[in-house]
Image 1 (cartoon, one colour):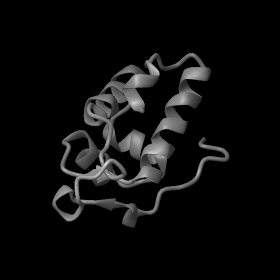
Image 2 (tube, rainbow, N blue to C red):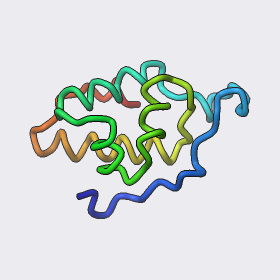
Image 3 (spheres, one colour):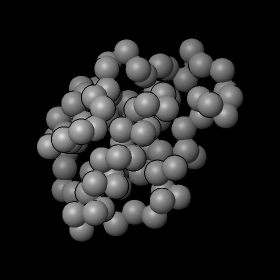
Length: 99
């Protein structure tokens, strides 16, 4: 379903305590809430969203619970998925919600 989107490797996530809080590693302020909202609007479970993004259920669970800071590639992949769903009329998010 993701077509030309890059796939996220499991090793591209790090626990917050492992990362320095710099502009390059900070996720958008409401990233966890946005992941939950995408699931809600699309009617997806965490497991289904994980399948769509080709990541594990536990990855989505950690993102929703703010226990993991996603790397830039992971954020870009999620943003691309959201843009694709928005273009199809299946999702309504402001750009500020995901960037």
